Figure 1 (cartoon, one colour):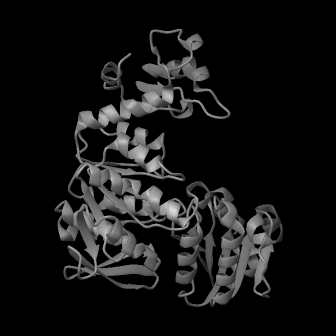
Figure 2 (figure 1 turned 90 degrees about the vertical axis):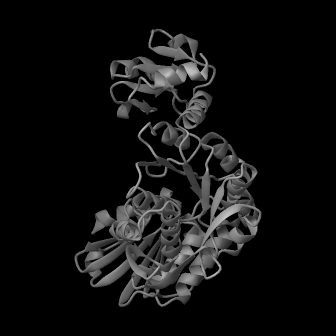
Figure 3 (figure 1 turned 180 degrees about the vertical axis):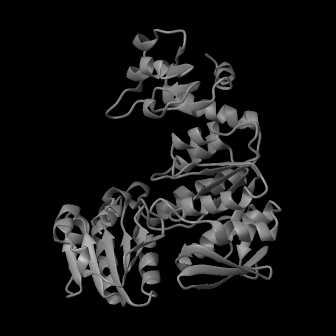
Length: 424
């Protein structure tokens, strides 16, 4: 079946699904395969649960008029998404970066939705499956699409751009994330900059943080709209983060519910993109001030007399450094509970030791390291405790001893340090 024919069938459906546990009536189900599962085996179940069509790639499961046999389900999903994107012909904003992608995406969506009907990536569905699903969630009512793109190796952003065909793009930053897959920081810069390559080659617009020298250099031959310092198209000034980030723009003071001065750039990008798309200044201010972080990203949670800064969604050396430096600015007694950082490859030992040394040097009363990498770090300080696993930590942790303390919880997703909340 040709993609245009499949697209006609897709338009009859109310949603796309890749998981029978979340299937809805009149959905189009894509029977994807993984290392430990074969979606083809769920074709019949998907139909019983209400799927209108099921896309499969193994002949033995082609047993119904509702099943559609293709050569490769994943490739078909990606081709259908690219076709649908062209069919809708709406402005698409793409963003990537080492840190802050999801928060920036949420802020941009909050701002633009004040004026437009937007559809944005849900959560962090930002890979070779998530980007197609995001595009297929857009419909004729969508006026602007916002697509987050994640990557952990070269050519991935290039591939995603060729599916989403963005008209606008923004890279939050270039940091020490996914070093194993990218082959070092230079590899990160090259890989993320594939978005710039696409936008420049197709004469599209790049949003640029004028305060980031790498962004400025990489986009000097592009159509760019910049924000930041006095040389930028829009001047946005950082005021303070005590603890919430406050900035000023065009005689407006905007105070967010985001902690850490590292969130200033995320706010500034959303402001600039709002201005570019002619969202009223008062509505930009309202959108940012009303945005409350969730999903373990810089959330502030009160547990008795203790204030917890939960930033356990992910971690890499760049974001960990920023979080610690910001955390030191907090007043009163402080405890940093830090989990291992993943995907660092040969740099893991060095980067964990660097973070350990940094944490010890700061004005933080107690530091708790959890995970095999931090456990191997060479630390000689009475204010440090090291645990090889979360279970080891859990068995010794006594929250009743902690009173009137600010606690930072940060680690890579695989550490699932939000589990600490259940111990209070």
